[in-house]
Every structure is written in structure tokens, then in C-alpha cells.
Image 1: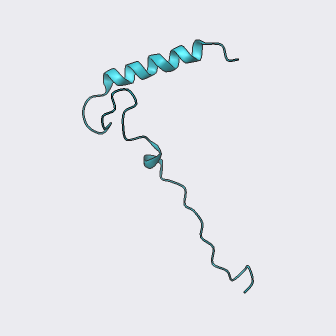
Image 2 (image 1 turned 30 degrees about the vertical axis):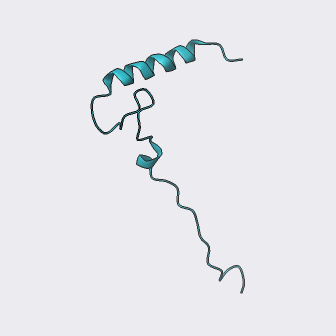
Length: 56
């Protein structure tokens, strides 16, 4: 059997909604339930602080 006739199994790329973590990294609860406004603000502050630090 030649390579032209050989069946290939391609790994599909994950859908974008599967790439998002389902659990909140701040409070540990499911992100689809409840209000995560406070978690979002804490996350933004953390990333803003890390962006200000010089990279070495």
C-alpha cells in the first residue's frame, strides 16, 4: 500500500471554547456559574502588575 492510499488520522485542533479554562483560577469555582466580577478585577490587577515588572 502506498502512502497515497494510506488512511491518515489527523488530530483536530480544539474548538476555541474548549481552550478556555472552566474553573476560575482565583476562586476555584466554575466560571459559568455565578458572578466573577471581583475575580476578573483581581486577575486584571495581577496581570497589570506583572506587566510593569521588568523582564530579565
